[in-house]
Structures are given as structure tokens and as C-alpha cells.
Length: 309
Image (tube, rainbow, N blue to C red; front, side, top):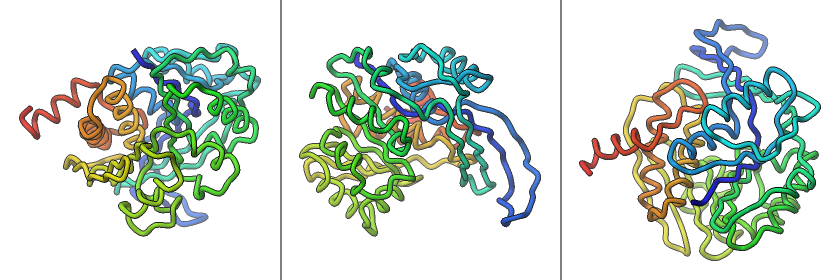
């Protein structure tokens, strides 16, 4: 069975729900607040809950936040590939969700922002594995170069998944230029794809993205409640989403990504994997918190309810 090797960052989310963000210098009372494990954990939990074994290839901290991260990964059955703890604690993200379900993040990077060639040197990859690279990782000086060097040296039968995230805005940065020719699967939301390419609509962004990548790279661009677009070798198709009442969009894109990769790893056709990913994201936004991806049974039930099969 293939695995997901996740090289991103597991951090701790301090989640607060508010009616509306205050103006600069203002103050509001949150309706709720809790500490949850988030960041890269969201994608890993989604994949693991949908039958894809996961190995975390990131550092984890010494302290209460690191303990929380390790406990959450253990509870999900996620294996930790770098055994030793870092000399600092795991980082923290303040995630504020408004009544509209929109969310705002403020992050502080900790142990997960460091990674060395020695950390990755002992990792054994197997044919068919999926290696997930987050755009956030390319912004951490203590991690980026070692990670890119390791990815570029992987055998060709290892599939590289790239999620640019909201902070990678251009194909021109040196590390991005180096990584783009090695990507097998691009996954992002529409806003990220438009920003990265300078396009004005998703279909145009897919064409422009293909120009930066190898032929036959699979592109998946999420379009919120509308579902997602998939494109490969010049063939582009929209996969409709599922209508639900959203309460929190935090982690929905991660649920989509993890379930989509799990579907591909299980040999599903691309469009079927995309439909399952759309269903998972729809269920995720009906729940509070970051790692709210459903398991495979819940995904099956929603698809059966809508399509009768």
C-alpha cells in the first residue's frame, strides 16, 4: 500500500469563534476558544481516516505544544519519521473564525520550521509513495533548501504533491523554480492559483499553471462550495461540490487534499477521487475546528445520499 509522506508543519491552533473581527486596536469577545492540533496535521488526518497510511517528516517540539502534536498524531495512527525532538516547542497559530465561516490566521513558527539533510537522510521511500510539500515549508530558511534538495533526489516513481498555500505568490523564486519540474500533483484553492499565475479565472489559471509544470501533471484547484477543477494533459473538467450549511471553513481545503490523495492511492479514477474530496470538504465545513475531515464511511454516505450509489 502506498503511503503519504508529509513534509509540512504540524502546529497548534488556538481557535476562536467571533461574530466579526474587530477593527485595528479594537476588541471583541469570542464565543468559544480551544487549542487544537492543526497545520499539516489536517491533511494527514484526512488521508489516514480515508485509508492511506501516513508518515510525518517534520520536526516536533519539546514542550506542551509538542506533546499535544505527538498525542494527536498517535491517536490518528500517524507515524513520526523523525524521532528526536527539537530544542524548542512546536509553533502556534491563532485561528479566528467569523460568523460568515471565513477564517483569519496569525502564526508563530517553532520547531517545525527547522529540518536538515541529516533528518531526511534516513527516510526510506517506496515506489508509489506520495510526498507532500507545502509552500509554507519553502519560506522557512532553516528547512527549505534541505527539503528541496531531498525531494529533487527522490526516484521518479515517487509522486510529489505540491500545495503552495497562501504565501507562495509567484513562480519566480529560486526554490519554486527548482521544485516545479518535479511536481506530479498540484493542489490549491482558486485564490492561490489566480495569485500564482496572475490569471483572472480558474480555467485560465489551469492553462498557465500547466505551462510551468511537466506534461501530464495533474492539477486540482478548489473552488469553494462550487467544488473543484481538475486538469491533466490539456483536458480540464469541473467537478461539482455538495450543498451544505457552512459554519467553519478552517481545514476544509486540507480535508479535500488528504481525501483526494487517498483516493488516488487506492486506484480511483481522478474524477471519482475529486468527487470524494468534494464530499469530504463539504462535511468538514459543517464542523468547528481544523482537522474536521470525515472518514471514508461518512464520505460514502454523503455520496450515496446525493447520487444514490
